[in-house]
Length: 417
Image 1 (cartoon, one colour):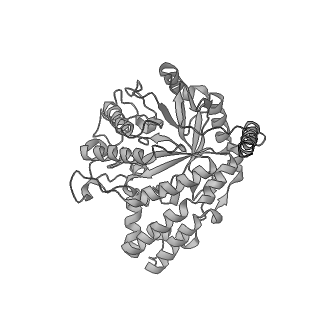
Image 2: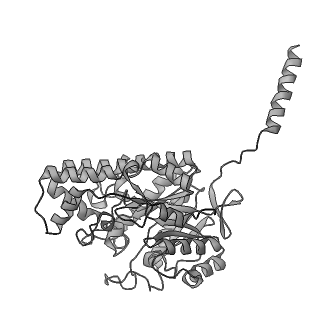
Image 3: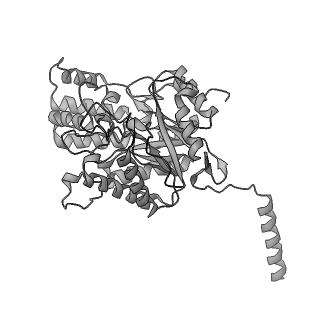
């Protein structure tokens, strides 16, 4: 009787299996010819970059002309409220600036990917502050923030693409982008900075090598340094013809990543804010995607032709890794252009004090007064007044306190499409 019972149970079990819907296994994103795929299914990335969270650019806080970069912003804040309260403000900023509710909203709107602009100093110390020369001190903050964001992405089936936005020493003359201190050696002037950059990527790769919702590694955001005219601070490498130091560093980073992780896509960016690929190709890895950035130009085939030529010549996928900061009509045209050529895209940014992005951060009146002080047009606030203004600004970064610009979202995701 026991044998008969077991056989009946096995029959029922196999019947249930045969009628259950087949669940597609989640694989790693990878490059397959000119497409990005999950297993063998093509994936068109539709993403948003969360600029302003791990790395503040002055314009996002209405501080253009007041502060040069994040270091300058911090110095101005610390002068007003002291180091301890400055640290409390930045803790609140990082806690509030990206929450599960943000990721839930992105999923509901139709985004399938997030690009995380990382500041290296949340993960490791600057070279000149290391207690032991040549060693790397690893900091918990950046990894914990990334872990939390990845958890929310996994729950929403959204790919998270890691982007080194601010590399040790800074990767160009555009100081706000990488929070670069121009009085110190850049990434390109310091072997120690390059070694730290490589070590950071190896550390990240070892940590996330088995995470299938990590979409890939964007190795170096918008290099903008002329290797042919290094002393010219107005030359951002847009016309360099060789770019050998950039290619060599990208290869070295890839080698370090591959020693720990053979699963994930490598996204690369050319010189001159990601668009000058002279001397960068051919590809050195079979799982590589060419990223370019597009701002303030026409939405026509001619504007992206050189990148499509690269795609055809080397049989690699393309990704518009950053675009935005324009109007809704331009957004619609740009996204339509990308999708008509099977090119994934990623908008910039998700949040700022401004109206041409999905989320607007409301500017407190007290913070506006603080800006006027920094401009020299208002009296100096007390430390307590300044601290309250900044903490209110951090509070306004929470999802529940944001203004949602549905017109921007509808331009990116037209109804009925």
